[in-house]
Image (cartoon, rainbow, N blue to C red; front, side, top):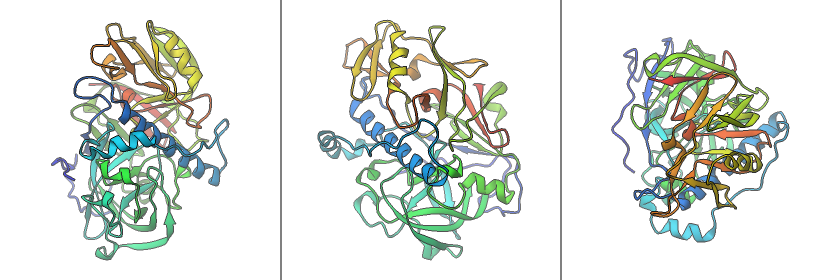
Length: 414
C-alpha cells in the first residue's frame, strides 16, 4: 500500500528522536484525508456505508464490553450482537479491493521501537486501544502494511497473552515499547501487535489505530498514548485538538493551534462515567428550531457519519421538508437536494452548524433529486439518549479535548 508523502513536522523544530526528557507545549501533526461515502458521480455509496455501519457497531460493542468488565455499563447501555456485512455485499466488495479506501479518515505517521519503525495510524477519539500488525501476520490482508518486529527493537517487551482490541476482529500479543508521535516520545507504551486480522483490513488505508479516549474503554491494562505522555511529563498541556477538513487537517498534541480557529474555545463538560468524550445537554436544530434536546453526544474522529437513536432521528427528519426513508433497515433518510435543511447542534452556548455539503452523502441515484443525509438512525447499544457525532460534524468546527476540564471544546474555523 502506498502512503502519503506527508511527514510529521514539529511546531518547535524538535527532531523525531527527541529525548523523552524534553517537555513540549504543543506539536502539530498533519493528517491525510481519505475518500468519503460519495461516489465520483455524486451518488451515495450505499455498499461502503453499510460496511462502515458494521464497523461502527462492532467498535462500540467492544468498547462497551471493556467498560462493563472494568466498571459496569453506563445507564441505558446494552451490548448488542456482533454485526456482519451481508453476504451479497461481501461478494461485491471482494470484486474491487482496489476501491476499498472507503471511509473518510484522517491518518498520520508515528513510530514504534528502537530504532524507530514507521506506521500510519488513524487517531481515534472514539476508542482507547492502540494496535498495529506484527511480522507474525503473514496473511494476505497484512500485505503492504507496515508491521511491528519486536526482535528488531531493543526496547521491546512482551507483556502478556493475546488481546482483542477495539477496531478490529483480529488479535495478537501485548507489547510495551517506545512510541514517538511528532517528537513526543513515551516509554513503556502498551499496544497490541496483531498476528491475525480480518479480511477487510486489506482495504483499510492505515496500519493501525491509536485510541485517544479514556483508559476505562480500552482492552489493555496500560493507558492510551496521550495519557502516557501526560503521566511521563513529556506534554505539559493536557489538551489535544483536531482540525478535520479537505485541506490543512491537523492533530495538535499539547494544546490547541490558535492559527486554525477564531475566537475562543467553547468547552462543554463530558459525562465522565462512560469512558468517552461525551458532552451532555445537546440540542439538534433544524432550520433554526430545536427538534430534539437533552441528549449526550460522543465525539468520534474515526467515524465518518453521525448516528442517533432511531426514534430521535425519525423526529429529526420529520422536521425536514420532503424527507423520506431511504433504507429503513440501516436508518438512512433522504431529502430534496435542492432544499437542504440547515442543521446545527448546541450544548447550551453557540449553535454549531453542519454545512449542507457536509450533511449530504450524495444522491440516491443519478438525477433523483433526493440526497442521503449523514445523520443515521441506529441502535449502537449506547442508550436511548446518546448520539454519536463523527466527521460530518467535526469538519465544521475546531475541536479540543481537555483532560484537565473533562470537557470538549469547539471553536469557529479560521
